[in-house]
Length: 311
Image (cartoon, rainbow, N blue to C red):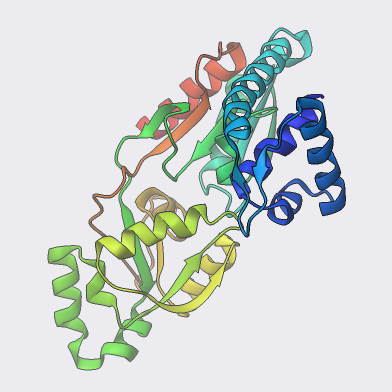
C-alpha cells in the first residue's frame, strides 16, 4: 500500500461513488476499482458496503480516520521539506480561484515586484474547494469566498459586503415606471428579493462550492433567482452584466475595481447596491496552511498586500 492508494480511498469515501471519484482524480473506473480491491485484500476486510451509494463499513470508517491523518501528515512533511529548499526562499507561489482573476492582482504584483525585486512570483489557479485539502505548491491563496477553519487567514478587507450589480437600462426595461420606487426600496432595505423579477448571471463550479455559497444568499433572501445565464467563468459573466444581460453578485471591492475607473467610481449606466448577508462572513483574505512557518517572501507579500489595501 502507498500514499496513492490512500488518496484514492479517501476520494471514493468522500464521493461515495467510484465513478465520481474517478472523474475527480482523472483516472479510469477500472483502475480505481482495482486499487480498491487490492487495498481490501491487503487489509483483510471490506472497506465499503456496495450499495447505490458506497458507504463505509466499520473497518472502512476506522481506516478513513487514520488515512486522513496519515495523508495530512505526509502533505505537511512535503510542505516542510519544500520550505527548507533554498530555491524556494526566493520564490513565492500565489493561488487564485479558477473562476476569475482578482482585479487588483496586476497592481499588487507590480507594487510587490518594485519593492522586492529579489523575489520571483508565480500565479496558479486552483478550484476553491481544492484549497481546503490541496495547498501543495501554493504559498498563499487569495480568497473572496469563505473558507473553513482548516486554513489560517490574514484579512485584507475585514468586511467586503456582497453587491448586486446591473445596467440601469435592464432595470428600467423590466420595472418601467416602478423602477424609482424599486430602487428606493433596494437601497433602504438591502433586500435582494426586491429584484426577484430580474435575471441573474450565476457562478458555479464543478464541485458546487460557489453554487452552495450563492444558494445561502438566495435562501436568506427567500427567493429562487431567475437564471439569465450561468457559467464557471466569472469574467464572462462580468462582461454579460456590463452588456445588460442580467445581475451579478460580487464583493464590493471586486465590483468597484472590475467596473470602476482608477478611483473605483462606476460608470453612470451601471447600478450597484450592497445586500444584507448574515449566513457567512464576507471578507477578502490571504490564506495558508495552519501551523506552516512562513518564509521571508510570504511575509513580504502579506505585508505588501495589507499596505496596498490600507492605502
